[in-house]
Image (cartoon, rainbow, N blue to C red):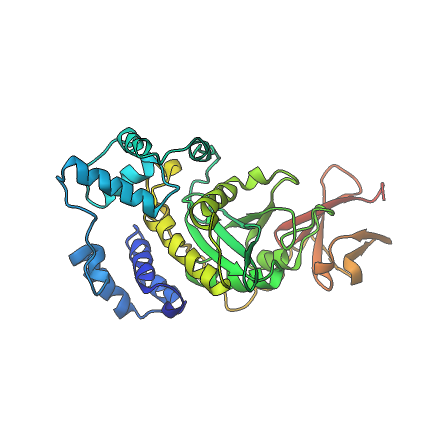
Length: 376
């Protein structure tokens, strides 16, 4: 991942955060970030000696020193609110603490904001948390989706977002010109090369992930992910809340970046996304994480992106059939529609024990469907 494509300071801080995690493979992390081990250890040493200020040419000072008077502390609260208009009392109180300020109760921060007319009924409603199931480990599941579109002077921008379910760490916010499988694959390759592969990716049923009109059919993009050894799952049709952390993330992206903003082109939008992504991952306290930041809970995956796709292999007891044109599978003189993305690919049929004539159909580890010879 070339360091010149994004803000250098943000990359250095992200590298330090991930490299400081317990059990982190620092040499592998250097490889994924496209830097030499010597450079990586240099930044680690500077961070150990001087903290974040050691990563920049100029020192970083907190807004104020500990022990400030009440009025300067109120001004610090208001300054953070102006910088992050969607942040409430809990996030601002925690961020002040992280910056070395005197501890303030979130209720005190809330009172300061309300006294200055910075709390509205709509803001209070938008801040209500969504309670969701959480996977136990980082990279157990990622959630992926497009955040609608944003009009720019040069055309539409489709923000593509990718979120780790356990830590809420955002791997990417990419300003894309199109919502298509080839675009997503290009972006995912860069993410995989940096953070490794997840166990599972969950998406909605729409294109380019799947087919809402034909449940069970997989797209070319999903096929590629399955060949990488990633489990692919889909939200229930017409129930986007099953990809709930992504939906909540999109609410924050809209409130803190998109509302009231316009962009000249994709490059300007991407610059805004990159700035906010750093704030979201490394500075913004997350209520669902006990006011920790997502970066403090994330660990990079130990599964590296492979140079080539693995061979497609099945067990000796499987009946292997090659999918024909139009995505059809022929078995015992009958035809079954699978997916056009599977044309020319081998699939495996496995009998369901105790149910004569019924089979499960797999592509590698992914179950495609079940068939019943007696009902077809």
